Length: 136
Figure 1 (spheres, one colour):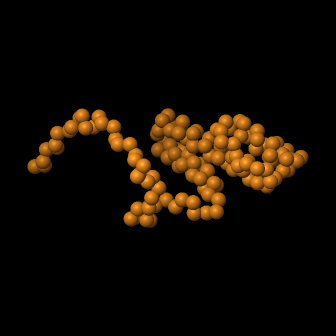
Figure 2: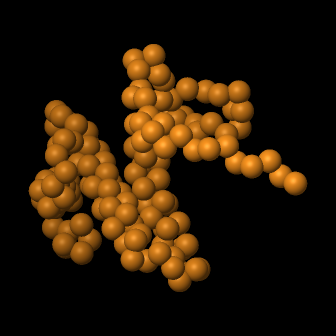
Figure 3: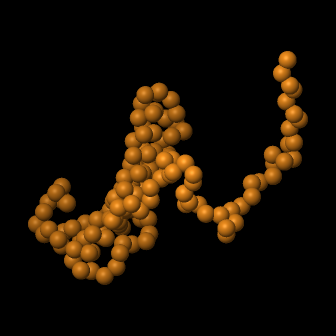
């Protein structure tokens, strides 16, 4: 015969979890080093950072396609991940274009993708004048 389950302390379950403290470290190595994510391991990790969002979206889409479930609940996370990927890639193009033209500054810190693309398009047009819109 199995032991009965202990009674549930419902009040304890309603208590919110403790907030992180200044001593907590989000990114730290653990004993099982083979399960640690490698951060900042290349000279310019921006592409890796951006491609992670695309890879995550692709995996979710693949999962929905394979199982034919969860499309209703995952559509917005998938769109968010693809949009974040595009935003980061456009910001990287802006950053690289400015560097190529010796323009001071990094990339805009806002998230308005239309404005980001406008800035990116302008810079790419200056770098390669005469290219068609499709080529840009």
